[in-house]
Every structure is written in structure tokens, then in C-alpha cells.
Length: 305
Image (tube, rainbow, N blue to C red; front, side, top):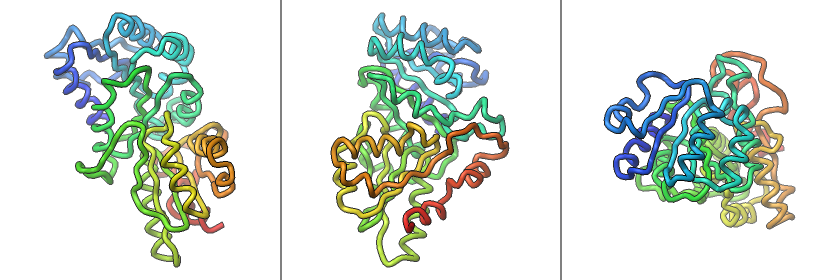
């Protein structure tokens, strides 16, 4: 997914001379074609995340369109003040591309696990957030980012995720996607948890005398409240699934939105996500998913409780 994201940015840069790429602590071969063909618009600044946010703000004020790429934890935790004051306050069109959202860097421990990036950034005025489910969705959403006003955070998963989208699918920034039509049960996903949601719906539909659907939000902020209300009104039970702490995360956003627009539907919602603690276990992303009950079977259990 990261490769698709960066290659799409390279393609956009070839068409738009205002696009600039700024990397921090990335591998030497990242976007080599960009560096070789457009060296005046390619910067690799080392371990200096706060500096590159400030640098991008200055470039944006001069009319450029900076795309920043580094590890999610350092981009969100270390640079929070710069993002808030330099970017969001001035509504500058800087794109923040965070590698390793969620538990991607599971082998490296809690310092590298971006388990609260959604919670942190969605509090900021003028900030937009996307979390694509696969490479196809990533490509189409990144293509939309050039015209987007204000800062944007792109939550990138590990890469190599199963492709669940199709090229013909209507994928747009700010619009939720109905991946599976519901009857009385609904799973609401974001990012790569869409695959878990589809797996859970398949288990549910093969074992229960009912139909569970999947509503996927590739855009977390601004939330597509119209489609959220449309589908939550039709069902009797809802489970949200996220690779983020439950405190202030995606599930909380769903409940807040329903509480504002359709309060009676909030009682239908149960949340699945990470507990309010640092992950002190090491292993693969899949192992930590299981350790923290981010599984299709657990989603089904929540639906039936």
C-alpha cells in the first residue's frame, strides 16, 4: 500500500510542478525515480520530523503542495504542536503520510506502534484523515488529494494487504462504501479492518438466520454522516472495528456522530479496538491482532451478545 501511495504521488508530481516530496528517515531507494527526474522537488531530511513539518508549512505558504512521508508514531506524537499550529491553524494543504498506522511495526514495540494516531489527529480543526483498505482504494484517494484544501493525514498499513476493492468501484474522498448489504446487523470498519469485517460477515451469514453487512469508511474525517445514518437506521445491532485505541478513536467518532444526528441509534453500537494501554508484547501484526481480540470471530461474538 505504501508503494502504491508513493508511486501515485510521483505520477501526480509529473503532472503538477507544485508538488514536493519530503521524506524523513526513509530507505535510500524510496522514490528514486522522483529523486532522479525531479531533484529540485525531492528532499530527504533525516531524523528531523518536527523540522520537516515546519519546512512544509513554509513551502505551502509559497503555493507549493508538500507531501511528507515518515513513520506514523514520530509524525503524530513528536510533531503534534507543529501540525496543530503550523498546518491546521493556517489550513495549509500539506499531506502527512504516516507509515505503520496501528500495529504494523509490531516487532519494534510500543515506541513504533501508532495505536492512537486517529485519536490524536481527529481532534484538530481543519485536519482530514483517510485510512484506505487496500492499494486500489489508496491510489484513487491519493489522486483526490491534490485538490483538497487543508492538511491531510494518510494512514498507511503494512503493504501486501488483500485487494478487496475493484477498479470499477466508486471510491471518493469523504464517501463511505457499502461493501456488503445488511439486513439486521452491520459492521462498520476503517482502514485494513475492512477485511476483518468482511470475514466476520461471512462467518455470521453462514451460521445465522440473518444477514450482516459491512459499511467501510476510508475517510475518517470528515465523516460521511449521511450514509452512516442511512444504514444504521436500518439495522438493530452494530459493531465498529478499528486498529486504534478505543479512547477517542474511530468507534467513538461513530457514536459521537450518531449522538448528534440520530441519538436513538447509539444504543445499537458496540466497539472493538485496542485497550487504553501501550502494547507491551512483541511479534507480528497478525499475532498482536489475535492477542488483542481483533479477530473475525470476536466481531461475530459482539454481534450476537
